[in-house]
Length: 387
Ligand code: SF4
Ligand code: SF4
Ligand code: FES
Image 1 (cartoon, protein in one colour):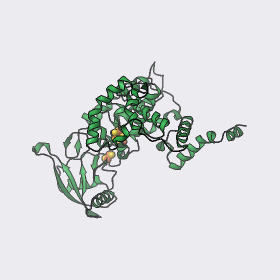
Image 2 (image 1 turned 90 degrees about the horizontal axis):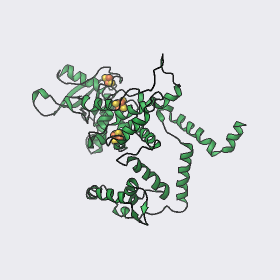
Image 3 (image 1 turned 180 degrees about the vertical axis):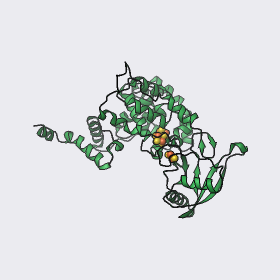
Image 4 (image 1 turned 45 degrees about the vertical axis):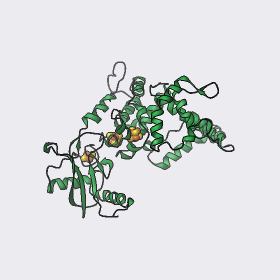
């Protein structure tokens, strides 16, 4: 047994008071969970402390919360580990290296109903329904079940592991800036149906999600949801798969999201590193008129982006102003540019997708990649084995 102090962000709407912090002392084995600590405080100190939970085994998805600022499940986080994290955080800013309080807050990006209980309906479930989370097959249903090859379902296994806890939504940085963003959980669910061979509305789904200004191109690729997800769903990876499929179908989006991605790919293939002076122009209207003159649409979009650029320079986010001047970008030395092109060629030929979840072990993953690269690396070997 050990003693811990948990500091809980409380909000009791019936009191009419604003939110406040309250500390509770609990006594638990370090291997027990933060949720166990909260339930002990509720049992011994204050029965009005509101926390949502059910299975206490990381299955039902009820107990999402922020622990020391990180979104996750209360029942899956050992209180001993939470204490270590609190101590590490405090000593990183010059505080005490042990005995710090464990800070517990309700999930982010969701209105708080009471204490640690958030309103998941208004954010999570509404967006979840937005992506039509059920199969849309065409034609008459079969007399019995749909038969599919097990292999064809492997691609969506990861997105099927979601328990709808909302931890990814809580941690999403894009959602903080744009509350209308469909968000990581709903988009991961969207991929579950886009990737399902029984669904017949793949193109419609992808077009809808690509053209929505708060859809797949609203994600800033920050990895926060990957870090928060207790089930390894890696929602960001599912969003990238949706983007890749939308690109394969040639779906144009009004935000130029796909064109922006292609701008990165094309500039680096051509120049080896990112020439930032070309990025806006290539994103909005690839190519130049005459020698250096950007196309009309690119000029219009660049002028529209000026206030953002000025804000970026003022706040120090955009630090290397000379990089934005055309022609200043340095070329790679020697044959390095050819090496970059060779990497592109190899990636296109091999079409490798990294998915640790499906492969299970990192070693397996490497072996699988090597296996796929082998024929390209040694064509003779392939012929020999076929012979
Ligand atoms: S990677 Fe995208 S979806 Fe995930 S938290 Fe960041 S912005 Fe949100
Ligand atoms: S993707 Fe992960 S974090 Fe998001 S709701 Fe599903 S299980 Fe929770
Ligand atoms: S109580 Fe069910 S996931 Fe935590």
